[in-house]
Image 1 (cartoon, rainbow, N blue to C red):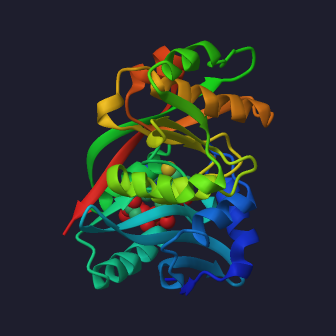
Image 2: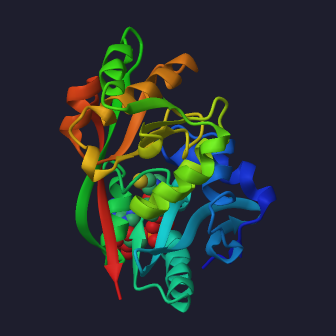
Image 3: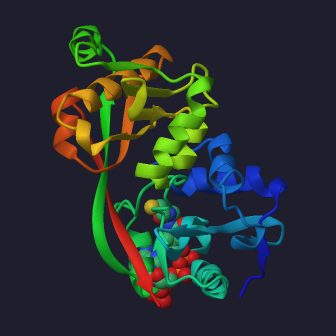
Length: 300
Ligand SMILES: CC(C)(COP(=O)(O)OP(=O)(O)OC[C@H]1O[C@@H](n2cnc3c(N)ncnc32)[C@H](O)[C@@H]1OP(=O)(O)O)[C@@H](O)C(=O)NCCC(=O)NCCS
């Protein structure tokens, strides 16, 4: 048995190197890993673990706690074990420690990867077969599937001028959010889409602000954001329209405005994660399902 240690900031380059090597279907950067670990709004040093062989990091597991719609849920956000140290109980050792820590924090269940508002992927990509086997061995049950879609941005016209003119005749104005809108937006989010507050707040860190809004008689009634999670990757979302205004094409316009931003930043594609209404995205902007994820949970 190896000794488990708590992750320290100076471990970041070595953990990045480990993730880069073992997560073969993903592209990591050190900045992205920092965002996942240290910039999580509920980051707790006691829930991020490494295992070392002499001084070399050979295992990593990142836990986090959230309160979601009144439930206390523990999450495993990322895990990686060096190829040479597989099937020797390294991940089990870290998981067993984290499960106890999460139970101590009154977790009612544990889920894997699908951590609302700061996640790398919304479940296990089943091509990581060892991770699927590992989850099942630890007593997790697959309870849902989800997917990420992608949109190729090159050569696509996301212009919305004509549609926006039509909406203006119904007193609906669509525009990019400004700093002065912040309070009103957060009030709208808190009322209708409270889980998405963090990602919407993060959109104010982009230049220009990566958030578009629709207003009916000067009141915010819909929004779409990008670059609120997995910064710099072309990550779209979240988006939401007030129930009274659905079916008017507002969501489609807001989506296209975000995609145009991402295109203007020079990225070749956008990722629409953790979907959701597949046909809406397929129909509106030609998005295609790119990756499927299996969602696992263990209820206590
Ligand atoms: C998933 C992972 C963290 C497991 O690490 P590990 O230290 O090898 O896991 P353990 O030794 O604790 O395995 C515990 C149990 O999980 C199951 N398991 C793990 N790897 C398995 C594999 N390749 N095939 C079948 N079962 C496997 C087994 O039941 C195993 O118990 P056993 O060896 O007694 O049969 C590791 O394979 C890894 O880093 N994979 C790449 C990264 C990854 O997939 N991340 C998730 C991205 S979605």
